Length: 205
Image (cartoon, rainbow, N blue to C red; front, top):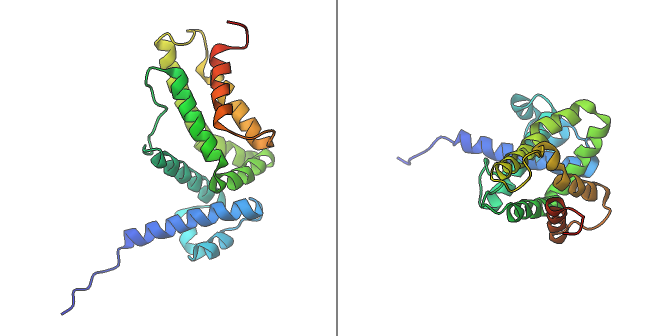
């Protein structure tokens, strides 16, 4: 008698979840947040809308989780994992350049660019979504900078009186500004310059 196995429901669920993530990110990048619907995501993913409602309460929840997953994939591509932190090699400048270059690559990736812009635009006019975006996606990433800069402060690599939460904006603020407004190309050289200007200042040395 042939050996039959029951379908692997875990694997099937993971495939469906991945399809929903991809569909949500693609759709919001194409039509914007307001016109993205659960029905549209379900149709694009090839699943029933009840499957989505069983796992998430709203399209915002789907998109935010899809973005978290996108970040995990980016970390894995760098050889890390979901808990990847900013490296601490003892060379703060090199470590910051490494992570900002990786951020440039992520922002320039079409999979990330279009949906990120759509959510950023919606967050301006939708305070609730904007707050959730900051709390669930942005702030955890910023805290990685806080931890690395705090370690640098303890090691005497930066002034003891600096506030890491403010200092990190010297790196990520200009990067986000250039990306969001498209004022100039987003490059590794630009990321390196941000680190150098922030760490060494503008005054003659």
